[in-house]
Image (tube, rainbow, N blue to C red; front, top):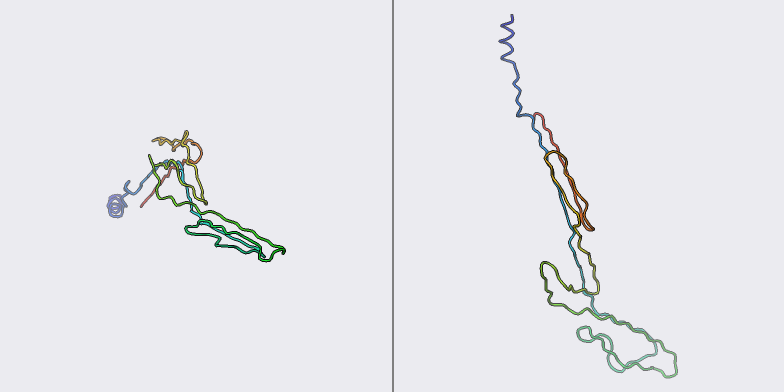
Length: 158
């Protein structure tokens, strides 16, 4: 009977393989220092006027290329009340070239509508990967980020 059980178990035995179990550990560190940036938009010239009982000798307002031209105002009806106001905003001059050295524009042109962002300072920013422990990061100066990550994956019977 024992022999029959031994023969029977040989036909129905399920082999086990270590290749069906996998383990993966992934460590990463990402260090970032924010770069300096300038966004600048050129504004055009504007001119506006309003009033009553006022007349002009000649042209006034914006002339060629947004240049302001003035005229001589005078009263339409002498001895009567009058009001007059005008506002002028000069256009930004057009910049046709800028020079850069080592990836930096030494004197960037700032138009009438500008946003400036300072670059980060690495300071003590650092990251370390270790074969025996989780990654470590050290904070840096302003405008920096540091991210350390460990991912562990275990698959059985994949």
